[in-house]
Image 1 (spheres, rainbow, N blue to C red):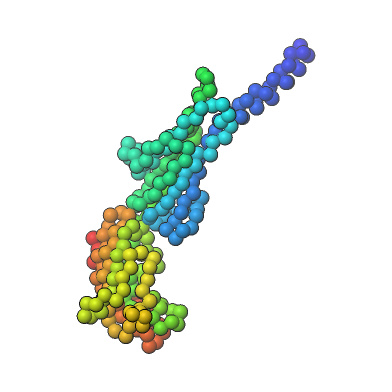
Image 2 (image 1 turned 90 degrees about the vertical axis):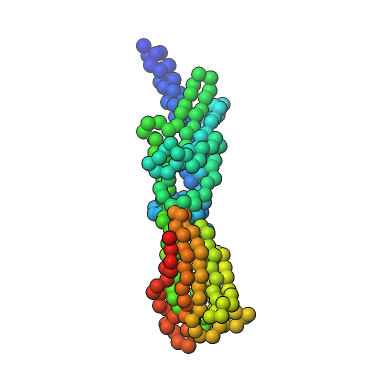
Length: 241
């Protein structure tokens, strides 16, 4: 009897070790926001486009043959897949608004031994929320180099803009400046000099991740003679669809 106990005491740790050394995966993600910030977790909705790199992070694979399968879908419609790929890692850019689910499925095979992921208790996808689009402009600015409201740019809080074109014209229709990046701005200069105080015209054509179109046509007042007069921000949404 003592001999049996000794043998069992030797084999039991080996059995436990064998169970804990089974292949596993630990899906994770690295996100890059429109501002270039790198995030490993998302605690709130993000602006589109959001770049994402998903990792399977397998461990204890050993002699097992591994098969990885990534699926991504819009929440509530798992049958309509946005992504279906068979790689250990996945790159995807979220360019539409909404809530999305990303799930890794993994299978490890060694002889007659097959291990699958996720189990019923682990079937929890990674969830990504992309915000609805928003874009507004002020109706005045003061390019007088005082460090306050010196440039024409979208109001703080713009989000999920996936295409953008903007131009500023004078009253005679001369194009003074144009840019194609929503993060861009106009410093109030034309041919290297700050334009005269007065009213100018802003035309913007943009599209949001949710399909919303922004066709903004509004006047912009240039006010360089005193601080603060260019801080007004009313009426900046223009016409949109």
